[in-house]
Length: 392
Image 1 (cartoon, helix red, strand yellow):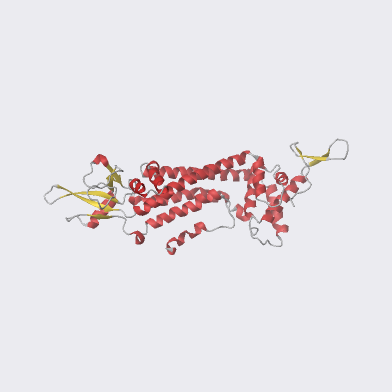
Image 2 (cartoon, helix red, strand yellow):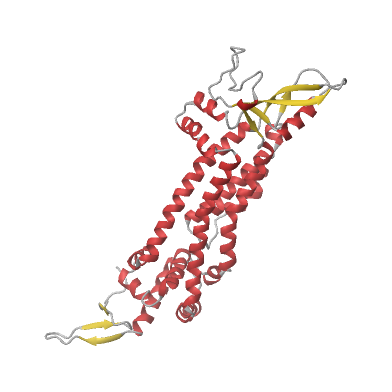
């Protein structure tokens, strides 16, 4: 089993530098891992045997032919979820045995497509992250090179600090603005991706999200008889199959079979988990989008978020570092503070704050008593003078 999941280990490997948040990682790493793991699990016949095994009576149709026919053409069960087998008191399989009229049949034709559906879903969850990697182009990795470890190089102040401050001060604001816009666009794609996958599964399984709700609710309540009854309508373990052929005399012959669908024992667990997981992921993505909308609209919230990533630094100093920097440069500073050594992040913000302070004009207040000073920036807004830069 270890060798079975070894190819997926790289998906969960922790990277020293990441340009995405926790909810994003749930999309592009955890969800993709779960979907690929389910794909490999369903394709491993050595663990669960044949996907279908049909029981037939004697005759010209062999068991292997019947298995292939029923797997390709599909099986069917009764639409009545409350039906209990009445021909024996020993087995209750939630499937109607005997003649089922055409209008009462619920056909199951998705079995051979489940593996491909899960693989397509994994690819869909990868696309927004792949697009972001193309746009990001390793910029954050290059800026954080050698500055993420607890022990810093001796010469980092003389080299990296000046380069980082110069990079944040001199590059065009359009570059940073497009950086944050593309990030928010990919984050919106992640949310739309969850809705698309919910719609995809709902379409393929004929109203899966509504039909499977009673089964999941029964499972969460540990009501296993109800779970088996409702679950068997979507993922039956036993189903019927009819094989029509021409007999030796030219008349139409019918051979029916009772088919065991062993893979549905796994399918029901996988899709019960995905039913809950996609809803949780959609809610988390929606809340994350609302949080980022608030960030884009509130400067004070951006200052608070950046201050929370730094050590022993006052919000006023962070606000001065962000003065006239723009939304894009705040986002890049926030990304750096999440990945750099905490001391590097703190000194970087202090350096930018000093640079901005040197660009401000200081005037004496025309009041009596002791001389006092106030600061006016380029927009004419009065700022309070800060004596201390850090908390002690």
